Length: 275
Length: 252
Ligand SMILES: Nc1ncnc2c1ncn2[C@@H]1O[C@H](COP(=O)(O)OP(=O)(O)OP(=O)(O)O)[C@@H](O)[C@H]1O
Ligand SMILES: [Mg+2]
Image (cartoon, rainbow over the protein chains, first blue to last red):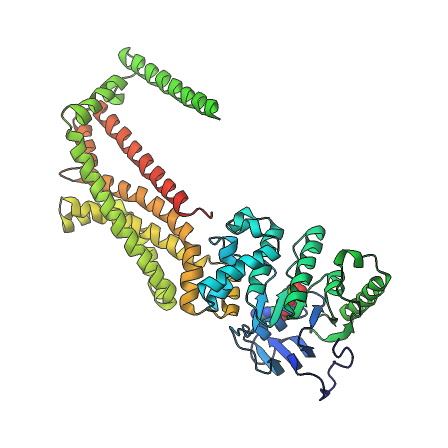
């Protein structure tokens, strides 16, 4: 695994492989341009290497979504610091990025297949390739029999799988996921985490994964970045040295898993009462 | 299922026969004055004569339907186009909104005499009244539909790099269609209402004109028959639109 220590705001170590995502001294303010603006993100810095799975955890309102939105280039805010994705500054519609939102945001007038195709359609993937790839991914997430179903006929978990398939169908190299399983019940969540792990290990994407669920963060990630309450700062960047491939369900009984959980929990509490 | 349905139809039939029977009996005794309330047998014979024997009612029905259809098509096409234009030019929308609200607040039936003056006694004035009703209904539905687009869908599309054009055709438009459709359904009913209302005030033809004439000659059987016909027409029109909607919007 790559560079698990000393990633925090220390100056870059030159012999590291080039980072896919690099954020330095990021400060974000909202509100009126002068004076009483609100500091949302405070001197955040981290970098993520190719193929790494990194989770971002922290109290509500600490700027996790803001950071993802900045990486996609969707957010216009008062920003200082440096931010690059694959060496380039963020721009809206960057084909290197696939964004997955908390809610499935499936288009209700498209079938499951049509929804998986939607992202590729916007990115001009030819029709024949699109259909085949969409079908493959639907099968991978276990929705092969539901290709022609409309979202209204899918359960919550199935819709989220469909959204997962849509995201992976993009074949972007960087995935930004904002609490994609936040609204699911515990069982469905474990199933989808498994699906995500399978997809991730076969497609090897770089992932930034925002979650409130520490167990989820540990089970999935190579590193977990803990942030403090607003203004969001990095409390610590914690490596997760659990061997892969991981079985999300079996991990729940692993003592090492529980140690990490306790450690992260303490950091989170510390960050919440920081000031 | 089948039996349930048959039973329910049977129940309704029984109720109608019972209701008409009481009405007929009451009007034949001195309980109900047939000059004011008509009587079922008279209504049926009026319809029989008008629709089957000398067929004069078909002609009037045709005038009303034609005016309603033209005013609905004209009014709603103009409304959808205006609504889409507003979504592309929000500043135009903001500028036009107060005037539109003012116009819409006017009771359109009260404008009918004016329209009669401008467009004459014929079908033109009827179309104007009907269209002035359906236009505003469909316009506000179109605007609401476009405004109601899910912001997650927009975020997702922008993150994917969709152009304004793609967002409009792939997200905004399809998501507005169900709302526009319910506006169209209402607009159709109101077109019919506007046309009949204008015909009541002054016309040479149409069910409304027939109704006004029958009323003035105290032919209550005829009045009731026309009312029944109009109700049936409204029902038919709504059912048709519902069918169309279900066929078109399977995903709902
Ligand atoms: N468009 C905006 N305008 C003004 N303030 C904003 C805007 N977006 C976010 N904020 C503020 O920035 C802070 C961070 O918001 P953000 O949505 O990034 O939090 P988060 O960490 O994703 O929280 P949660 O876990 O609840 O999703 C919040 O305090 C919020 O009030
Ligand atoms: Mg958030």
